[in-house]
Image (cartoon, rainbow, N blue to C red; front, side):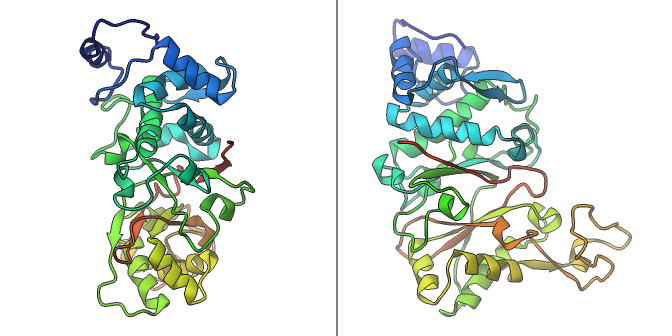
Length: 346
């Protein structure tokens, strides 16, 4: 994409961006040379450094190209390293970015920022966290990822994107983990030894889970969440893969005070979030190839978990504390979009 160095009016630029297909419908800032250079300088990287080829078009995502899209999204220089790190994580083979952006399934790469960077970047992590929370950083980082996939990757609806219903997170899908979590940050739980980090995971929009009818017993409260994880039509229920669950800080503290660390939550949910083979396969339908050998598909009463391992259930803490709440962000299943975590510099 070319860089705009002059424009008579911002209104003319906005209309030009729409006419040239540089945006998916929302107005964008002009990527002037001064603004792009400022982001590149803040990154400390060479502008020509190649992050990778962005599918499905295979456009070259250099640091400069990423900066141009980040400027269009309204990123400040301090936001840019999050964008670069997230893009590099999504380009790992196990994430299957090509599949994620072109699938019929309504998933999209969620960028999760965790650790001290959340407060350093003034990211929202309380009310309305999944819709940006009114924070510049959340919206701009998520938007920059989207614009790069749109402009460099050519991820436009119809061709090549076949997503049937769409996903509101395709405008911007970036959240921050709460500093009030009783457990280590998500990236550290996933083996990244750094103060701050990012995790990318392709998932659906959050489905809220309230504690109607549940007492204070952790097993009963997590049963509410497990039931929402194992709905019959979910990709995870049939293909396993990975999934994301979200706890408000006060609910996470309640669990921690009752002896549950993150691993215990994962184990409990893995044991509870299951469906009978007989519920999943109609008579005569063969068992799925991606089920592990220990699933007895010949027994209709065999209980199949939504993921192959407890650690494939990612547990994040974020959101407001007005009341305890939970949510499920179902994954793409055993097709890709698997979580990737990386250290965040700065």
